[in-house]
Length: 359
Image 1 (cartoon, rainbow, N blue to C red):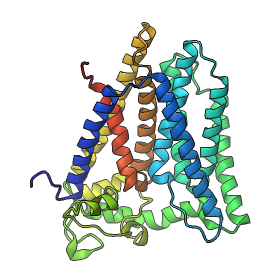
Image 2: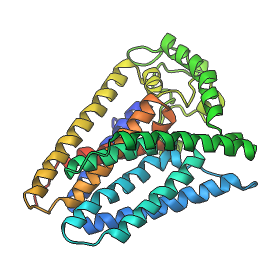
Image 3: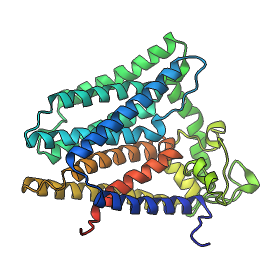
Image 4: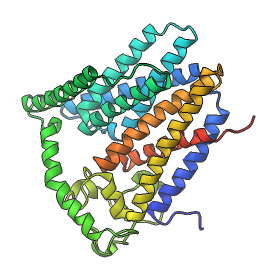
């Protein structure tokens, strides 16, 4: 059947289309009032806090396995926290006392920062970058004073240095190298540079040279699975394209999972696909900002019908920008596997605001 995907790229595009259609209906048919959006954000925020907390605890306790939830769900946690923060000034405008609610959201923010940061440095980078973007977008949407003052930027730099320094000290005190940011930097130098050379020598406009994959003769010259949706989704539907378990983790000299995503996408799908992906990301950001401007005009004109949608868009746009920057330019694992599914969902949550279904 022509609708059954035959390559990883076709499957990614099909899932993106399905998610987009689903999100359009949810945004238009579900009663997304501001109170409902806030309640959903708080429930999900508590859920992610508990999830990351238990994962970090299992990391510290011997004999327990951990799941590294921050990679696939870190951007979703950012989505719900920024959405909740964006809803606060809207609730204040209608006379609701938000002091206790703000304190609770800030508590969730701190707990996620600590537990997620213990699990992965890449999450900490995505999280802090996302919060900066989120506060900036919120300040612009509500015409507040800019968050980017010299003092605050200096404090953020100090906090980042202190955070990474604390992780390095903790790794040495506990003799657990998994916490060490320095070790991660050394691994990037050790594995990423050979990977970059491999990509540059073999990538083409539509994929890569035949036989250049780790799996040799089985290499198809494109959509070979270096960038893919979750393996479980591929196996569930029995789709007819190659799946290579753990190659990005066990064979880091091929394409290291810490390599920036532009190299992974460029190698697996070709430079043309990379160009359209970058264009797509930039276009979504511009579109999201324009939609935020439209929502702000409606709100300032007294129309309170779209407050819930505006809060969701602020959170979605923030999380999408942060995940795009980290995944494409720092570490491809942040937009690969389950994280790629999250990435597609966030893009659908932005594009879905363009369509309005008449009731």
